[in-house]
Image (cartoon, rainbow, N blue to C red):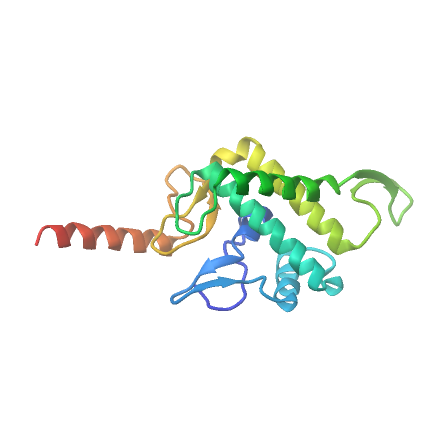
Length: 194
């Protein structure tokens, strides 16, 4: 994996892409949301509006949301990897964080540029706030809906990513993790037989 800010697994739902802003490189765990510039770049790469409005408070709020979504995902997937946080106290706090952000996502009927009524979420306010609220709502739908059964923690060696199991044979977030897992199993089998 590249050791720079990226958008890992770009075909995954946006909440999974948010969770995957924490990823493992060769020598350490990386955080794409370590700086406001990193947050802006992630907004741009994912097509979220309001990148130019982002400031330190937005970074802190989105990191809180990301960490909460990861804690809930750890609970949903039974993730026992080091660093996965599925404790009861953490889970309650995570649910409260996602719910508070999603609650800001209020439907409103507004007129578009052509004067036609359209349904918008969280009308008014900053685009960045609306994007965060909509992301929280999408995360709540993913983690609490029918698709929650498809969410998986990748158990490739050293991997910390999540993915949606969109094919019955998919067992890892990427082919690279699958290859590393097969090599590790092969090595373990041969080491035991010596």
